[in-house]
Image 1 (cartoon, helix red, strand yellow):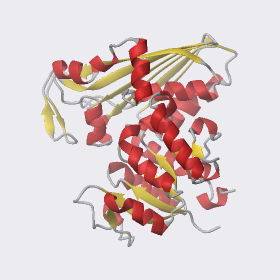
Image 2: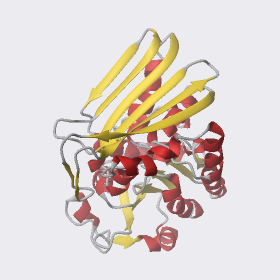
Image 3: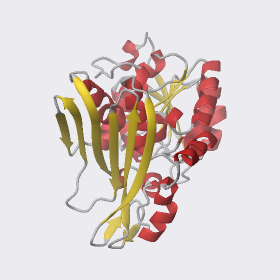
Image 4: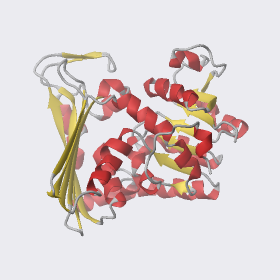
Length: 357
Protein backbone atom coordinates (compact mmCIF):
# COMPACT_ATOMS: atom_id res chain seq x y z
CA UNK A 1 0.00 0.00 0.00
CA UNK A 2 1.12 3.57 -0.67
CA UNK A 3 2.13 5.84 2.18
CA UNK A 4 -0.70 7.31 4.24
CA UNK A 5 -1.30 10.91 3.15
CA UNK A 6 -1.78 13.35 6.04
CA UNK A 7 -3.02 16.93 6.22
CA UNK A 8 -1.94 18.84 9.33
CA UNK A 9 -4.50 21.40 10.55
CA UNK A 10 -3.05 23.67 13.22
CA UNK A 11 0.71 24.23 13.14
CA UNK A 12 1.38 25.31 16.72
CA UNK A 13 3.22 23.64 19.59
CA UNK A 14 1.66 20.19 19.28
CA UNK A 15 2.22 19.91 15.55
CA UNK A 16 6.00 20.12 15.96
CA UNK A 17 5.99 16.59 17.38
CA UNK A 18 3.02 15.27 15.45
CA UNK A 19 4.47 16.11 12.04
CA UNK A 20 7.85 14.68 13.06
CA UNK A 21 6.18 11.45 14.19
CA UNK A 22 4.06 11.30 11.02
CA UNK A 23 7.19 11.23 8.89
CA UNK A 24 9.01 8.79 11.18
CA UNK A 25 6.13 6.28 11.05
CA UNK A 26 6.25 6.13 7.27
CA UNK A 27 3.51 8.60 6.35
CA UNK A 28 3.61 11.69 4.12
CA UNK A 29 2.36 15.18 4.92
CA UNK A 30 0.64 16.59 1.86
CA UNK A 31 -0.75 19.83 3.28
CA UNK A 32 -0.67 22.07 6.35
CA UNK A 33 -3.01 24.85 7.48
CA UNK A 34 -3.16 27.53 10.16
CA UNK A 35 -4.73 30.91 10.94
CA UNK A 36 -1.52 32.47 12.29
CA UNK A 37 -0.17 34.97 9.77
CA UNK A 38 3.33 34.47 11.20
CA UNK A 39 3.19 30.81 10.09
CA UNK A 40 1.27 31.05 6.82
CA UNK A 41 3.66 30.88 3.89
CA UNK A 42 6.41 29.11 5.80
CA UNK A 43 7.65 25.57 5.19
CA UNK A 44 6.58 23.06 7.84
CA UNK A 45 10.26 22.30 8.38
CA UNK A 46 10.35 25.60 10.27
CA UNK A 47 7.83 24.21 12.76
CA UNK A 48 9.40 20.75 13.01
CA UNK A 49 12.85 22.39 13.26
CA UNK A 50 14.33 20.37 10.44
CA UNK A 51 15.15 20.77 6.76
CA UNK A 52 12.45 22.12 4.45
CA UNK A 53 9.80 19.53 3.51
CA UNK A 54 8.45 21.49 0.53
CA UNK A 55 5.07 21.77 2.24
CA UNK A 56 4.04 25.39 2.71
CA UNK A 57 1.61 26.25 5.50
CA UNK A 58 -1.59 27.51 3.88
CA UNK A 59 -4.28 29.81 5.25
CA UNK A 60 -7.06 27.91 7.02
CA UNK A 61 -9.67 29.76 4.96
CA UNK A 62 -8.48 27.70 1.96
CA UNK A 63 -8.98 24.37 3.76
CA UNK A 64 -12.23 23.31 2.08
CA UNK A 65 -10.92 23.88 -1.43
CA UNK A 66 -7.50 22.37 -0.76
CA UNK A 67 -8.80 19.23 0.96
CA UNK A 68 -10.93 18.57 -2.11
CA UNK A 69 -7.80 18.80 -4.27
CA UNK A 70 -5.31 17.05 -1.97
CA UNK A 71 -7.58 14.15 -0.99
CA UNK A 72 -5.53 13.16 2.10
CA UNK A 73 -6.30 9.90 3.87
CA UNK A 74 -6.23 11.61 7.27
CA UNK A 75 -6.46 15.12 8.70
CA UNK A 76 -4.87 15.73 12.09
CA UNK A 77 -6.49 18.65 13.89
CA UNK A 78 -4.47 20.26 16.68
CA UNK A 79 -6.22 23.53 17.42
CA UNK A 80 -8.82 24.11 20.13
CA UNK A 81 -10.19 22.28 23.19
CA UNK A 82 -13.98 22.51 22.74
CA UNK A 83 -15.97 20.64 20.10
CA UNK A 84 -17.78 23.87 19.21
CA UNK A 85 -14.41 25.44 18.37
CA UNK A 86 -13.35 22.60 16.05
CA UNK A 87 -16.84 22.03 14.67
CA UNK A 88 -16.18 23.85 11.40
CA UNK A 89 -12.87 22.16 10.61
CA UNK A 90 -14.31 18.72 11.38
CA UNK A 91 -17.35 19.54 9.26
CA UNK A 92 -15.09 20.45 6.35
CA UNK A 93 -13.16 17.19 6.76
CA UNK A 94 -16.35 15.11 6.90
CA UNK A 95 -17.85 16.97 3.94
CA UNK A 96 -14.78 16.06 1.88
CA UNK A 97 -14.73 12.44 3.05
CA UNK A 98 -11.46 12.90 4.95
CA UNK A 99 -10.85 10.87 8.11
CA UNK A 100 -10.08 13.27 10.98
CA UNK A 101 -8.40 12.78 14.34
CA UNK A 102 -8.12 15.66 16.79
CA UNK A 103 -6.44 16.58 20.05
CA UNK A 104 -9.61 18.50 21.00
CA UNK A 105 -10.26 17.23 24.53
CA UNK A 106 -14.05 17.41 24.29
CA UNK A 107 -13.94 15.36 21.07
CA UNK A 108 -12.65 12.41 23.13
CA UNK A 109 -16.29 11.61 24.02
CA UNK A 110 -18.48 14.51 22.86
CA UNK A 111 -21.81 12.68 22.90
CA UNK A 112 -22.16 13.33 26.65
CA UNK A 113 -21.43 17.06 26.48
CA UNK A 114 -22.57 18.32 23.06
CA UNK A 115 -24.83 15.69 21.45
CA UNK A 116 -26.07 18.24 18.92
CA UNK A 117 -22.68 18.73 17.22
CA UNK A 118 -21.77 15.08 17.75
CA UNK A 119 -24.87 13.86 15.90
CA UNK A 120 -24.42 16.36 13.07
CA UNK A 121 -20.81 15.32 12.47
CA UNK A 122 -21.65 11.64 12.89
CA UNK A 123 -24.34 11.81 10.21
CA UNK A 124 -22.11 13.79 7.83
CA UNK A 125 -19.15 11.43 8.30
CA UNK A 126 -21.33 8.39 7.65
CA UNK A 127 -22.77 10.00 4.54
CA UNK A 128 -19.26 10.55 3.16
CA UNK A 129 -17.76 7.26 4.40
CA UNK A 130 -15.13 8.70 6.74
CA UNK A 131 -14.39 8.61 10.45
CA UNK A 132 -13.90 11.31 13.07
CA UNK A 133 -12.43 10.77 16.51
CA UNK A 134 -10.76 12.57 19.40
CA UNK A 135 -7.61 11.19 20.93
CA UNK A 136 -4.38 11.95 22.78
CA UNK A 137 -2.86 11.54 26.24
CA UNK A 138 -6.20 10.65 27.79
CA UNK A 139 -6.62 7.67 25.43
CA UNK A 140 -3.94 5.80 27.38
CA UNK A 141 -3.33 7.47 30.72
CA UNK A 142 -6.93 8.35 31.58
CA UNK A 143 -8.54 5.59 29.58
CA UNK A 144 -7.05 2.30 28.40
CA UNK A 145 -4.55 2.08 31.27
CA UNK A 146 -7.46 2.31 33.72
CA UNK A 147 -9.69 -0.18 31.93
CA UNK A 148 -6.76 -2.63 31.68
CA UNK A 149 -6.31 -2.51 35.46
CA UNK A 150 -10.06 -2.90 35.88
CA UNK A 151 -9.82 -6.08 33.81
CA UNK A 152 -7.59 -7.63 36.48
CA UNK A 153 -9.88 -6.64 39.36
CA UNK A 154 -12.45 -9.06 40.78
CA UNK A 155 -14.84 -6.48 42.21
CA UNK A 156 -14.91 -2.70 41.74
CA UNK A 157 -16.57 -0.17 44.04
CA UNK A 158 -14.99 3.06 42.86
CA UNK A 159 -12.53 4.41 40.30
CA UNK A 160 -10.73 7.59 41.35
CA UNK A 161 -8.22 9.47 39.25
CA UNK A 162 -6.20 12.65 39.24
CA UNK A 163 -3.95 14.09 36.57
CA UNK A 164 -2.02 17.35 36.41
CA UNK A 165 -0.44 19.12 33.47
CA UNK A 166 1.28 22.41 32.75
CA UNK A 167 -0.95 24.62 30.60
CA UNK A 168 2.21 26.33 29.32
CA UNK A 169 2.83 23.26 27.15
CA UNK A 170 -0.39 23.47 25.15
CA UNK A 171 -0.89 27.02 23.98
CA UNK A 172 -2.99 30.04 24.81
CA UNK A 173 -6.43 28.54 24.08
CA UNK A 174 -6.01 25.89 26.73
CA UNK A 175 -4.52 28.33 29.26
CA UNK A 176 -7.49 30.66 28.84
CA UNK A 177 -9.95 27.78 29.15
CA UNK A 178 -8.41 26.99 32.54
CA UNK A 179 -8.78 30.53 33.80
CA UNK A 180 -5.04 31.05 34.12
CA UNK A 181 -4.25 34.66 34.99
CA UNK A 182 -7.74 35.56 36.24
CA UNK A 183 -8.40 37.10 39.63
CA UNK A 184 -10.35 34.80 41.95
CA UNK A 185 -13.39 37.04 41.51
CA UNK A 186 -13.18 36.80 37.72
CA UNK A 187 -12.53 33.04 37.94
CA UNK A 188 -15.73 32.64 39.93
CA UNK A 189 -17.70 34.65 37.36
CA UNK A 190 -16.15 33.24 34.17
CA UNK A 191 -15.31 29.64 35.11
CA UNK A 192 -16.67 28.27 38.41
CA UNK A 193 -20.17 29.77 38.30
CA UNK A 194 -21.03 27.80 35.17
CA UNK A 195 -21.18 24.57 37.21
CA UNK A 196 -23.22 25.89 40.13
CA UNK A 197 -26.48 24.91 38.50
CA UNK A 198 -29.15 22.25 38.89
CA UNK A 199 -29.07 18.93 37.06
CA UNK A 200 -32.05 20.05 34.99
CA UNK A 201 -30.30 23.25 33.95
CA UNK A 202 -27.13 21.33 33.07
CA UNK A 203 -29.08 18.90 30.90
CA UNK A 204 -30.68 21.85 29.11
CA UNK A 205 -27.24 23.35 28.42
CA UNK A 206 -26.02 20.01 27.09
CA UNK A 207 -29.03 19.64 24.80
CA UNK A 208 -28.54 23.18 23.51
CA UNK A 209 -24.81 22.70 22.92
CA UNK A 210 -23.89 25.38 25.47
CA UNK A 211 -22.35 23.24 28.22
CA UNK A 212 -18.66 23.78 29.01
CA UNK A 213 -17.24 20.42 30.09
CA UNK A 214 -13.96 19.93 31.88
CA UNK A 215 -11.68 17.37 30.27
CA UNK A 216 -12.69 14.73 32.81
CA UNK A 217 -16.37 15.07 31.92
CA UNK A 218 -15.67 13.44 28.59
CA UNK A 219 -13.13 11.03 30.10
CA UNK A 220 -15.70 9.75 32.61
CA UNK A 221 -18.14 9.20 29.75
CA UNK A 222 -15.43 7.35 27.81
CA UNK A 223 -14.57 5.13 30.80
CA UNK A 224 -18.21 4.25 31.40
CA UNK A 225 -18.64 3.40 27.71
CA UNK A 226 -15.53 1.24 27.59
CA UNK A 227 -16.46 -0.56 30.82
CA UNK A 228 -20.12 -0.91 29.73
CA UNK A 229 -21.35 1.05 32.75
CA UNK A 230 -24.58 3.02 32.65
CA UNK A 231 -24.32 6.49 34.16
CA UNK A 232 -27.26 7.66 36.27
CA UNK A 233 -25.91 11.07 37.34
CA UNK A 234 -22.89 13.32 36.76
CA UNK A 235 -21.67 16.58 38.23
CA UNK A 236 -18.55 18.70 37.96
CA UNK A 237 -16.90 21.41 40.03
CA UNK A 238 -14.13 23.77 38.97
CA UNK A 239 -11.80 25.10 41.68
CA UNK A 240 -9.09 27.73 41.09
CA UNK A 241 -5.45 26.87 41.72
CA UNK A 242 -3.18 29.57 43.17
CA UNK A 243 0.44 30.21 44.09
CA UNK A 244 1.87 32.39 46.84
CA UNK A 245 4.32 34.18 44.54
CA UNK A 246 4.08 35.88 41.17
CA UNK A 247 4.45 33.41 38.28
CA UNK A 248 5.43 34.32 34.75
CA UNK A 249 3.50 32.67 31.94
CA UNK A 250 5.24 32.63 28.57
CA UNK A 251 2.07 31.39 26.90
CA UNK A 252 -0.07 34.22 28.28
CA UNK A 253 2.84 36.69 28.06
CA UNK A 254 2.10 38.01 31.54
CA UNK A 255 2.99 37.74 35.21
CA UNK A 256 0.25 36.03 37.20
CA UNK A 257 0.03 37.87 40.50
CA UNK A 258 0.34 35.91 43.75
CA UNK A 259 -3.08 34.66 44.83
CA UNK A 260 -4.63 34.88 41.36
CA UNK A 261 -5.66 31.78 39.45
CA UNK A 262 -2.79 29.89 37.88
CA UNK A 263 -5.34 27.45 36.43
CA UNK A 264 -7.97 25.14 37.82
CA UNK A 265 -8.86 21.76 39.21
CA UNK A 266 -11.97 20.20 37.70
CA UNK A 267 -13.58 17.29 39.55
CA UNK A 268 -16.19 15.14 37.83
CA UNK A 269 -18.21 12.56 39.77
CA UNK A 270 -20.53 9.98 38.23
CA UNK A 271 -22.81 7.31 39.69
CA UNK A 272 -23.83 4.26 37.69
CA UNK A 273 -26.56 1.61 37.62
CA UNK A 274 -23.85 -0.93 38.44
CA UNK A 275 -23.09 0.97 41.70
CA UNK A 276 -19.55 1.78 40.60
CA UNK A 277 -18.66 5.40 41.25
CA UNK A 278 -16.20 7.24 39.02
CA UNK A 279 -14.44 10.35 40.34
CA UNK A 280 -11.88 12.02 38.12
CA UNK A 281 -9.92 15.23 38.63
CA UNK A 282 -7.73 17.10 36.20
CA UNK A 283 -5.48 19.91 37.37
CA UNK A 284 -4.31 22.25 34.63
CA UNK A 285 -2.27 25.27 35.63
CA UNK A 286 0.87 27.31 35.09
CA UNK A 287 3.42 25.37 37.11
CA UNK A 288 5.62 26.80 39.82
CA UNK A 289 9.31 25.78 39.59
CA UNK A 290 8.90 22.74 41.85
CA UNK A 291 5.79 21.25 40.18
CA UNK A 292 5.62 18.53 37.53
CA UNK A 293 3.07 16.43 35.64
CA UNK A 294 1.56 13.59 37.64
CA UNK A 295 -1.04 10.95 36.85
CA UNK A 296 -2.55 8.86 39.67
CA UNK A 297 -5.47 6.46 39.55
CA UNK A 298 -6.88 4.06 42.14
CA UNK A 299 -9.39 1.29 41.64
CA UNK A 300 -11.08 0.49 44.93
CA UNK A 301 -12.42 -3.04 45.25
CA UNK A 302 -11.01 -6.52 45.47
CA UNK A 303 -8.16 -5.77 45.38
CA UNK A 304 -7.37 -2.05 45.62
CA UNK A 305 -4.84 -0.99 43.00
CA UNK A 306 -3.06 2.35 42.56
CA UNK A 307 -0.93 3.36 39.63
CA UNK A 308 1.18 6.53 39.66
CA UNK A 309 3.02 8.04 36.71
CA UNK A 310 5.33 10.90 37.65
CA UNK A 311 6.68 13.37 35.13
CA UNK A 312 5.14 11.86 31.97
CA UNK A 313 6.11 13.71 28.81
CA UNK A 314 2.48 14.66 28.28
CA UNK A 315 2.94 16.58 25.03
CA UNK A 316 5.00 13.89 23.31
CA UNK A 317 2.73 11.11 24.62
CA UNK A 318 -0.32 12.96 23.31
CA UNK A 319 1.23 13.39 19.88
CA UNK A 320 2.50 9.82 19.65
CA UNK A 321 -0.91 8.41 20.55
CA UNK A 322 -2.58 10.57 17.89
CA UNK A 323 -0.20 9.31 15.20
CA UNK A 324 -0.26 5.68 16.35
CA UNK A 325 -4.07 5.71 16.23
CA UNK A 326 -4.11 6.59 12.51
CA UNK A 327 -4.56 2.96 11.35
CA UNK A 328 -7.42 2.49 13.83
CA UNK A 329 -9.05 5.64 12.46
CA UNK A 330 -8.78 4.50 8.84
CA UNK A 331 -9.91 0.94 9.64
CA UNK A 332 -12.89 2.07 11.73
CA UNK A 333 -16.50 2.14 10.63
CA UNK A 334 -17.73 5.49 9.34
CA UNK A 335 -19.09 8.14 11.69
CA UNK A 336 -17.95 9.97 14.80
CA UNK A 337 -16.40 7.02 16.62
CA UNK A 338 -14.88 7.13 20.09
CA UNK A 339 -11.58 5.30 20.61
CA UNK A 340 -13.49 3.34 23.26
CA UNK A 341 -14.94 1.49 20.24
CA UNK A 342 -11.67 1.15 18.30
CA UNK A 343 -9.94 -1.60 20.22
CA UNK A 344 -6.72 -1.50 22.19
CA UNK A 345 -3.97 0.88 21.11
CA UNK A 346 -0.72 -0.76 20.00
CA UNK A 347 2.85 0.32 19.43
CA UNK A 348 3.51 0.12 15.67
CA UNK A 349 6.73 -1.71 14.85
CA UNK A 350 6.10 -1.35 11.11
CA UNK A 351 5.15 1.61 8.94
CA UNK A 352 1.59 2.65 9.64
CA UNK A 353 0.40 1.85 6.11
CA UNK A 354 1.12 -1.83 6.79
CA UNK A 355 -1.65 -1.86 9.42
CA UNK A 356 -4.36 -0.71 7.02
CA UNK A 357 -6.88 -3.45 6.30
